[in-house]
Image (cartoon, rainbow, N blue to C red; front, side):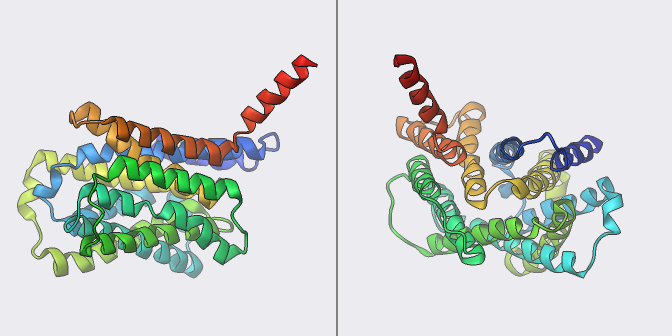
Length: 322
């Protein structure tokens, strides 16, 4: 946990290092977001069987509560900086974070896992346009092309041929909207506020929303589940890694990455989820799914580099011929 604090402080220090270029900052932040999706991708394997013991909203309550209790102890010095603006903005982030997870989890009960994953990632296309609404900054053609390429890749990765629409699909669509708004608001709030403090507040508020909603949707508290060591391990991983560490990295790193690029990078969660399921759970990986992963990766490279390295290579070859 001390390592987490040192890592975040060191990363933030890069912003104030005169020799650190903007491109280098963006590259470091992009790697941080990719690491976040790696954590989330592995979480699919960790919690695959936990829903048999812990109802979905209580699972959210556990993970957000664990994260909200531990994170403030790592950054004790920052607690005294919390004011009303931090509470309002952090609570708004927490609300959309909880809403996204809740709609996704409930929607998954009425639709297929593939459609749930695909429809959720509609935020990849929505984020550039939501950001445009709030900031009046029109997304460039590279961002739009990368978004379309990414959503196509996710479709190949997730969909299994059932293109009908049901209640679960509509609930999952709401989830995608909530994720998109969450990503855009993170970009807005971290421009002038400490991302660590925002993370602390948003996780605490998401925990509160979860505990309020869990008894209404899931019923009685699952005490028997806590007697299962594997469930306890899963909750700890969800709380400490998949929630506390991952959302801390997301909030800190998004300060240095455009929202449209951040959305694409975060969509790599689907790729890592498939990869770990293939390696550890022996789930099948078809050629179509592999091609979908390649398209998502290509979309990320396009958004990050605009394929400038190809232009430079072509120029070098032209110069060499002259």
